[in-house]
Length: 232
Image (cartoon, rainbow, N blue to C red; front, side, top):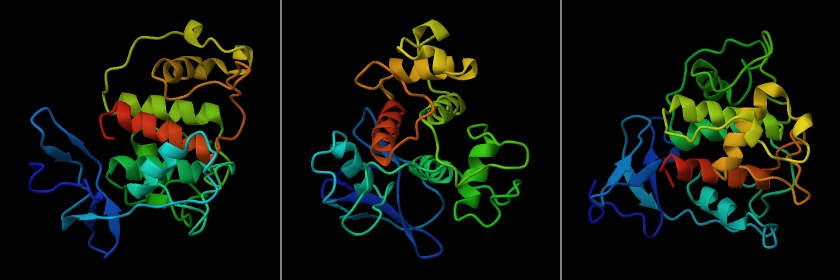
């Protein structure tokens, strides 16, 4: 779509879905200056002003990422004025944000005992079906806080699913001072996240793989991921 036909310079591109809800439209601008949209289904596409301000992120180092994602309706506050940047993310919340941010087609059925009544049932099952999210037997544990290591693994799998070109890395590239605390199955994913600048370590040089991913950290991770796949 040419920019002079539909321009989000004064807001964000959104789509009105069949159920009446409004969702942001993942998009990029191609080399010809035209918008390439990732649509969920048929429905009216228009520009909406969704600028949001949260009072508790003024001194947060990831403020720019939080605001950018909020404007695209990818993340919400914990209430009208607060984002709660230091609060942890659950596996369900993080998975739903990944699905929504890329408008991945939803799956219709849940295959885990603990997701049938979860608000993110279909979003999570979508990620399971494409190999991004892994369960533990017949449990997906959507209410459990997601760790930094788990988030790194999910992003790495998502990039593989999207068939995005990524640099070659090895476990040796995970040069964090607490490398021994990172499980072997996650070392390459963590190394890739560092290489792509999606994840960074703590100030003391640790990755802190088993610490909960905070909402603030999530914003940076998600923004950098979308930027890498050319959707920001």
